[in-house]
Image (cartoon, rainbow, N blue to C red; front, side):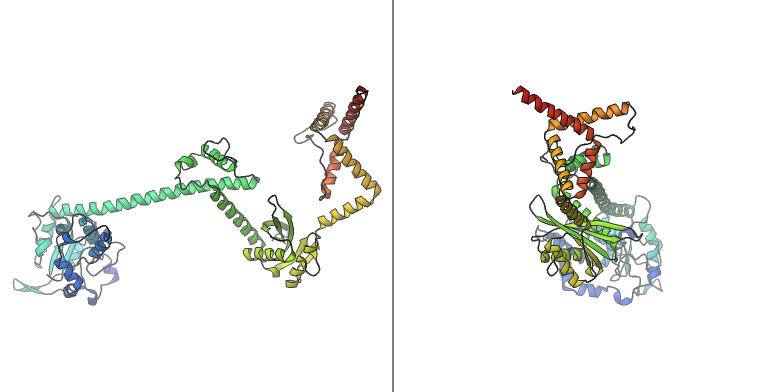
Length: 532
């Protein structure tokens, strides 16, 4: 039965320990063998020999330390060992396990002494170890053989298997190897039962270790399943630009917010997630708290920016910067990178919003430097700057443009073309009488038609009736995405494109607008007549 070699596997090899690989690795030198005189000469060893193991104090405070010291100083030579039954019953199994892990004492490189046996000089042959490598031991002190399994588990009384020969006195008849085989006996012998007890003792520990290992592995898989579910929910909300938190996220709330509701929806449609989420997850590891959500969001942001930086690489790039005040009344600076990819296409990537306490050029420059440093960008690769026309941006001496040009003269400044176009068109529209009157009239019409919900409903209803009539008369093509409901849009003061879209809406709904205005005029005349 192959039992004990597995116990010593992976452990430190001693001279009196099991070494199954010595045939290929070579034999240890004589100097490494633990001689009995050396073992007996230590003061600590003498104290252990003279002390009854039952008298060892294993109190709560020093139990672990004293037990470790006891196990560390267990003698290797069988002649120096105390009986297992002399140890405290509470630590007997630990002593047995320690001996099994060390393996039997087999000093193969020892120079075995000769003895006169029936007129012939004989000595022990280390090849006997190969036949019983799992349990056969040799005592240098007694020049005799012992059995490790029987030493650990042999009953206190029993005469089978050589009585106390292989546990106390030792076997040294080097002429008769059959005596070792007689000790082994058949199935059910004392030696066989001791060997089974050794196997059961070690398998018990291995079973516990494997059980704990399986539990740890299951916990890891459950954690990864729940973490992936939370990450998927975060990615979906980020991609759709939706809010995470809810007004009431309590247990009995009907709407706990997008994140929790989405995670619950995912659990209801995925048995693997349902088995590890919410009430099935540990209370301290549910991966749904606001802090966990923020951590995943920040991680997603970092990974996204890293992907952009890998795309930029060492290529030259330009920056587009603009600052604005958010709803929390904080000055925020948005930064966009503009570069050419490997396919020759111009790419613009938003890389972040930096909070600035002040909008002066030095504060903005410091924020940009921190952004570059954090993402591994070099200002020497900067080839362009795009800002609006504010003095803190385009100032010739102390503006952000000038501060960057001092460090890199190749970072040419370009006033934002869209901003320039807006400024030019607004100035032109204000100074041209015809254009100014036209847009003034457009604003009046929008104010008149869209002044109330009632009037908006009127124009929407009128527009719908016209579309139905035109479709009935085959005056308009039909199909998916055509003839959608439209509304009048107010132009924005900072985007000239909004004026263009407003004009397109007025043109497409011109007849409906005229009819609604006529209805408003008729209602006004009627009210005047009624008032007398």
